Length: 100
Image (tube, rainbow, N blue to C red; front, side, top):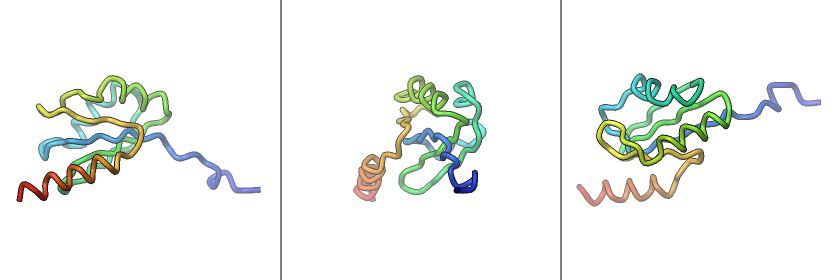
């Protein structure tokens, strides 16, 4: 029999794309905390600035996606998804490369 930690399900995550360099974890906690209990927030920089917001359960992620996908964060429209959007990241990286 597998130990309890081995069968533990991964926590639900909301992925947030198109963030400006001004957005901080505290801002995201304030905004996305309205949709459920946040376990962890990680911001990732680079050509595609994004965040991973870990919630307690999937219903909270779905509420965040429903209310915030297409919403504005720091005057920029955000994409919020319950799945990692690798194609979106690739397009953003390509777009940034063309700007140089």
